[in-house]
Image (cartoon, rainbow, N blue to C red; front, side, top):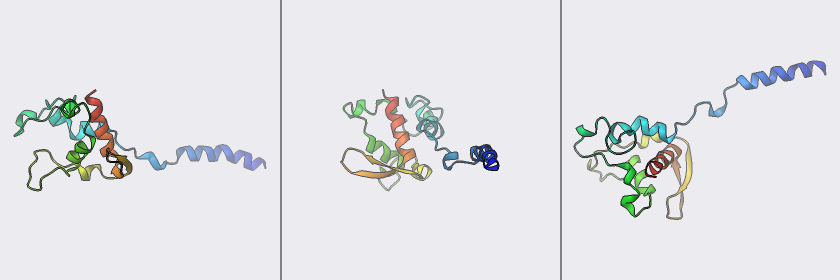
Length: 135
């Protein structure tokens, strides 16, 4: 019995040192924005990133997405554009597709059509971060 009592603190210490399943954290929407978007769209999303002037077209002001859509943030269209679904198949967008970079854990998302669709968590977080930029 005494040996068991002495083992409890040792066991607790070992458990605390063990890597948890979530030890590798998923980047936040802000992290992904800073890594993948800010160089073109700017730190605040206004289209004034450090390489924006070198683009063939103006980088959109992401803070105006809801305003340009009747006050409603176009989440499905934004996620489609980021992922790469919104391409016309002929290189019709100057924005690169980021879908493969955002793959991983999925969550169910209803983008307004009543259908919960498995969607990469990082893509959802990035879209939610963009929505917050416009508030």
